[in-house]
Length: 225
Length: 114
Image (cartoon, rainbow over all chains, first blue to last red; front, side):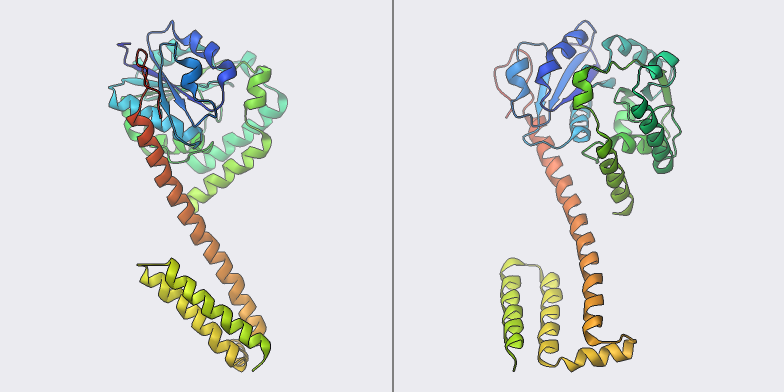
């Protein structure tokens, strides 16, 4: 519990897989912060025997808001680095040390990418691969960052990045917003290859094509208003 | 006076009363709406005025002029309300976040996060 690395996991009704996801993380020397984004059944009722810390939004706000709450908590508690991690089990806990290595090497932000190794990108369903290419382009237009992947929720931030980034997009558009802020604050970004395991559960819970339109709309509104 | 004029004027009066009751301490918003209601009453009593304005502006009929203005008004109004929504959402987010941060649950404590 003395670690200054905080792993932030936003959860919204993820009870089914949450325990497994957390169990994989416990071997790491890090503090695990579950941000319960107003789940119907409070996360605390299913996770109170785990060595984790839980913050609960009284109402559902969205993943971006939950990450920001986790980061606020981390900053207040003297975190040196935070990891953004998905609750649904699609990210590999064993990748986290590589993220931290890159921070040590001088990156302010480390982003996981599914397109740096052929075996990772081959694992993606074709439709998803095409959609992500479109999302890369949207990110370039809105944020000016040309990355190999888009909207991969696996990230590491150092203290400088945590202080520079303030997510205001409550829902999924935060993934593009964060890139815009990275660029604006001239943070140093590195990408590392990560494997995403698409279980049936994570695909069902994951982003639908129709939601891409909502994300785009959120981004446009943000530019205009 | 036609029946429709009576209905419209009664409607504008009702709206004015609601506007006074709902927009307490917001003089600018009150003035804005009351100005519109007054214009509505004037145009209802003297419908030819809208035709007069339409002729000046190069619109065929007074009714069309009012319709065009209405379309513009609805769009601008919607955008303003959307902006207000986003601002409210930001405030609500900050509030919920503070509640969450004020009640962290840590291992070894029994207190449930509220």
